[in-house]
Image (cartoon, rainbow, N blue to C red; front, side, top):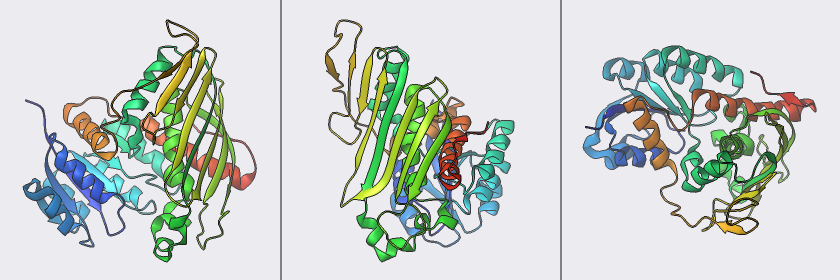
Length: 346
């Protein structure tokens, strides 16, 4: 019989993506029960409606809930400013942790949590859900199999709408305030592409330089625009544009060039992956992946995390990769502030 575990949700009134996580827990067979700690009571009704009998108990105090319920995994979705001590509580209770990104205001606050998790043989998994999208799996294998040869460089952008920044209600959200979020577009959305660049190529970013700005001039104290240059441990170089520029929707792509061809990911299109390889039967021809784009999003990622915790298998993101994603994004902020190239600390 497949193993099943009890999962805790540790959140509050400012928790992000809680609705998506509730749906994922409902639809994940490896989650046999859910317990909720919500000091504000913001998500109690939603949890009852979505989870039904799967929701076993509701609490206001996270520490007391962890001691009483003893869940195997905890989902921590809180603003970056207050997330680290809650993650620490869950680790002390022996829980694997799934954490909404960025989960800290500084990499220095996240590193001790990963060290503690490693010492306890527990997972700390940042919510970087694009990793399990089908085209990402295919692209990663193509590169690992040498289809485009040695990686020379990459260029990527992730651009969202400026419209949200004009909404007064948005100005009060934690992700629009640096002291609560750590940054703006880069730490909220750009971090996904920084992680994917490393995941797809199996190469770590080792040095960064960059700029951040509020180009739209809205009354927020975080950046709506970031540009970064990247050096990878395999010698490749790359760039990232990360910003709120559009009226609506998203523009996104990751293009990777190698010694034997190139590969292009455009995840939000119907055909999200195409490539040219100068090897094999299709040498020099444009090839297009026509597989099923589903499943994608938070549900398959949450499911993969829970199944890894239940069965003691590798999760979709390792502790080291979670920490590196945080280190890279905050190193870009440091580079932008100091005007210097920053080496990612080990």
